Length: 171
Image (cartoon, rainbow, N blue to C red; front, side):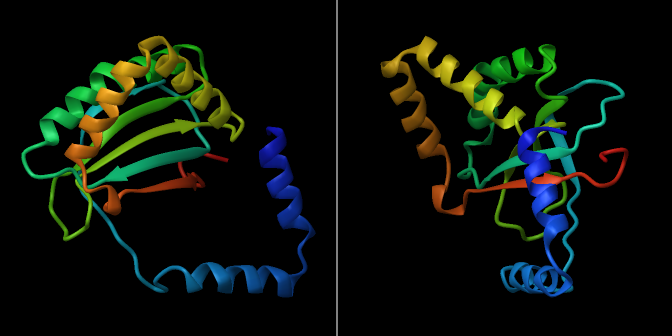
């Protein structure tokens, strides 16, 4: 267990029952209670370590503009997947990919870009790898890529999530 994860676990263990209840009520106030959402997705990019037991799933979810899905996936493969592949080989992450809804269920997203890892400190290593990739590409190319990315997406519909995997050996 990494230092960050241990601090969260220790902090949670130190809470009294009424404090835990207040924390849960606060969480539920920001969500829709008793509502569950399921999606059928298709992975258009996927690579992972067989047998790994990741503890966390980080998702970056976008609504890609009509007709731009292929370009968004191509850009991901050309620039992001290379960095994720290095992180996978180094053991920093245990998987990465891009999922698209295979059955439209009315959600406000078209593409979920994700990575799995076993310790929250690996977020820092992932960020450092992407910063190094940005620096290697140079400012001019990064500005072009950023502008292209923003043109492809409804940036107001973008959201991120970090989820703790508690099933399938993610303890």
